[in-house]
Image 1 (cartoon, rainbow, N blue to C red):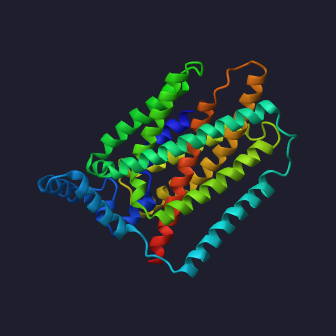
Image 2 (cartoon, rainbow, N blue to C red):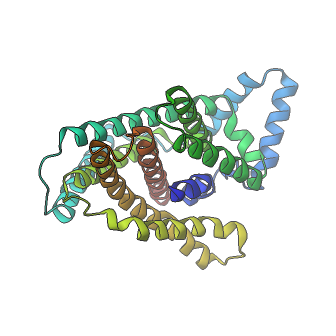
Length: 334
């Protein structure tokens, strides 16, 4: 579980694609020094004119309109939807063909129930995170994040994300109220970290969400139907991969890198992270089934919330990288 705690704190600092989208929009450069005077000036003007909320909605709407891509024609829109659907379907078929040639027998009733409970909490946590992130965006939290010191934001993210996650993991499932409250607090911390994503065009966010569902769904199906414990050996290599991805994300903040080195570290954090967290979905799915078998034998207490946290963080990291990739593709077409 250490790998999710390490990388949960560095997600707001590992968005090269979104940062590039801000090259034409100075106010979108996350933690950039050039954005701070504009943000602070807009906040001061809002206070002088009386009423932060109305002025914020006007300013955020203007930023949003400038950042959004131009509206495509109906023919282009249908073409994009067809390409997206074909990509998702091809991913499902390809993953099934290459990774799941040897399948296992049907899941037992206990395994099915435990896996369903874990995915219910995963879906519920993602819904809570999305709704809370949208509310925080409308309340102006991203502007405050951009105007703050990046190291302060990193420290608060570390304390909030890791603290609530560890509190949830180490709370007994028998203590239902406390565990659910900590779980909600964990999702709130994720929402605060992800709220600046709403600066991105809704078309990109929806496509990234669809890609994420297709990839995670296919990998979860492979993990659930593959031979028993086939992918559990991947835990150590994947942990090492997450460490490399996390260090690549933090390197531009701590080291004076040239343009070529910066591009290499961004590629590792983006595409390497996509591969690593895809492998994590396989590993976590089979780990859930392994824990289900232990629970059936009475060797452990079933705890679907703990299982859901790992899957939720895998999906969030995959989603963010798809947003970055689609944003970079959109910028190249302009």
